[in-house]
Image 1 (cartoon, one colour):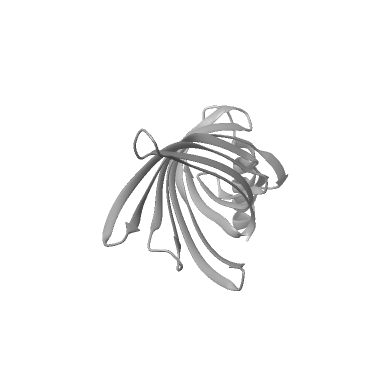
Image 2 (cartoon, helix red, strand yellow):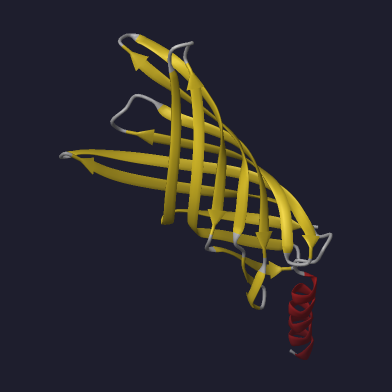
Length: 196
């Protein structure tokens, strides 16, 4: 019994000492699912969103990480024919504040290039529209739990995002889409990280 307790204490001590030190690297990914309902003038619409984001990064200083993720997002709505697909390359920065043993508060800032793809139906013609742009995101309620020194579980509950997409149809028509969203809980992301 003493050996087991000694081993557990050693694991906790090592994981506390080795967490978030300069030079530590990680790879992993996040997944998020969201639903929404909007009612405008007695007409309702239900939407669905999915996001997947593999990531890679490392600690450039103690408690400060930088990384990059490739993010895919899908948004649909039952009132329209089209679904919006988005692909982004997002560099990110995070700062780690220790709240308890192996539990960290991790506010994160990310920014990068985004490309949206949707299909628009005009009569019997379906047209594919590609919209390049950029995005900025701030995760204000991000957390990470490290049950072992080489494994982490991430959770983001509160996000503020801005996305700008641009589409030029011809010399006379240009479409721009800017969106700001503030999400709490309903579009949370959860992820896993492996450290080396």
